[in-house]
Image 1 (cartoon, rainbow, N blue to C red):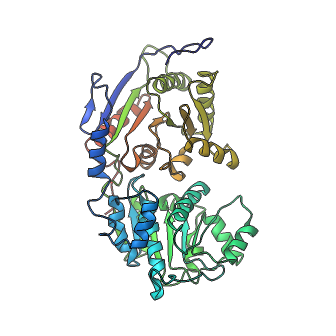
Image 2: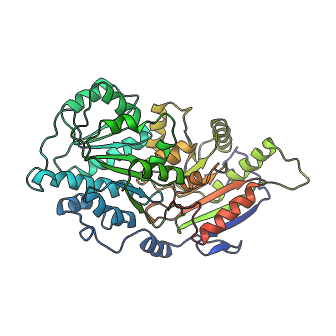
Image 3: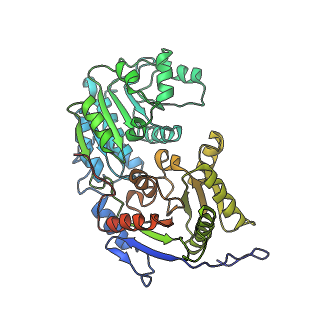
Length: 453
């Protein structure tokens, strides 16, 4: 991609690069990524189940809903979870990002609703939900994730007599209360807003059959989250589902203590990186004789970022930073490298961007791509946004994650649902050895961090 007239070309910079994917370290001579045929074989082996939706217990009505969404085969985690959820068991469902967990819990819950109380298909199921009394409640840590779960639920209930309602902060609670008065079967929302509606008597949980905590590890590690308030209002027979892409041992232990007998359903890819994702380590430390400090490190990483994005243009790329100030500096650097806005479009997604602009940027990123889109973001994107409808081909770790769980979540934004992806980690000093160790382990199928017993 050459420089446009009047635009200064980026000067190439010396750097050391190592590439890892299934099978171990790749040399500089190995330039090619995964071809489509090999990627399809990997997806068939590691993502999809050998069983059909009918074999795992999906009803004709549920299968019709899947067909309308273009979904023909269950993933492995869907196969594992479906029968247990259909039976009403409380479960921990833990599997890597992009594995189909939302569908894994939503579809059997909807099928269970349709069959409860002897209604069954063709007989109206449970009938119209009582005012203010949802039968399924799904809690998500961010408004963005709640909205996306609601979108999936609405797509699945298009041909079912079930009503879905999404409630999050920043929206009028009075309007939300009026919607709940009309009766909803599935309520999806953020914990704070659901708790507020509960305290205001705008929602009642006496009819609740199931409570889902999506991204439960994020919520349990948040000091402001208090399950006791909602849990105290739940009927004794409530089915609890704890869904997560990463499961730290303290979170697993807390759930086991508070919910003895909960079924532990670990997917085969938990805490692993998908095999069709290529990981690239770029050592930006620079020569020993040059000055090494925070500012020179940023400059080297900035130059490597621009070079990598030019060398590997992708329709959609995510650039992760550890702080908002770094996000701002990276956004400015990318815009300066493309002053005529012909190479790419830069979008920001973090808490310094107001919710309306965040949603606007997310909509642009998820829409049809006319030129490469680069979203510069913090961990808010790795924890609360689902890009299944917008394939992310390239993830750049401008700053290395602070903990193993966050590494799994960031990298999991690409290579979802069996698709091919690339991850580039820009590292300095001591980070180089840590990144190399993680990537070497990933290429051999090791877990980034342990799975609870």
